[in-house]
Amino acid sequence: MLRFFKNRKAPQSRILGINQRNAELVYKFNQRKDYKLADDKVLTKTILHKNDIACAETYGVIEKIGGIAAGWEAVKHHSVMAIKPANGSGGGGIKILRKNEFGQWMSSGRVISIEEIYKHFADIIMGIYSLGGKDRVLIERCIEPHPFFHEIYPAGVPDFRVILLNDIPILSMLRVPTDQSDGKANLHQGGMGIGIDMDNGCLAQGCIGSDFYDLHPDTGSQITGKKIPYWEELLQLSIDTSKAFPLNYLGIDIVLDKHEGPMIMEINVRPGLGIQSVNKTGIKEVIQSMPEFQHVLQ
Image (cartoon, rainbow, N blue to C red):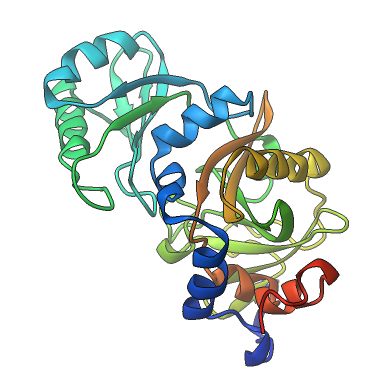
């Protein structure tokens, strides 16, 4: 039987609010000129590749409307690829293109024409999905999720979010899709957040809104107590990535590839605060419990 529990909130004094997060963590530990290194996925990938940090191979970048045709010609030999806005957020504008057995391109379960692909590229470049202004198209290798994820939910690409302060992981969660989220792992689109015991690398309960689950609500698969593969490597990858960027408070999103193991998906200079509800633990509480950070949040 599916079990769920109402959210048992941590005391409000231990919860980090958005204003305090911005003032005492984001602004204090990061320089504004460096935000673009996290906000722009092309710049992020450049740093990751330069530092030999595991991430999806970059197939191409299209910067101008006039470069769409040539950019597509350079990448169309791949049988599957991920299309992303460089400055997108919340998963907007991301498309997975995959060739079927007839050589036709498929996206979201249907055949997509070259004209539609070109239009999507143009929409990205014109900034429809971006944080502001014109954007660039990032085309990269498509991650093949590790079988561990399929044991929980068979579709989409789940990812881990690790929040770090001064290169030290302080809190993490796994985000997995649900039927409601249409295959996306984003919490605000109906995805499930799953808490993580960072000491032993095991999953805690899953959370959707204010409800907590031991089993995935759509598949009935066990969540609580599952051991995360590559956990130590995943944490080390987050630390190595943090050290490669001049950002001292950030969220790092990591996927587990079936063949390559842990790989960086993106980084966030303003990681969301929902991770506190998912873990039933406040970021403030965690930071204040660590001797090296006793005077960070008052």
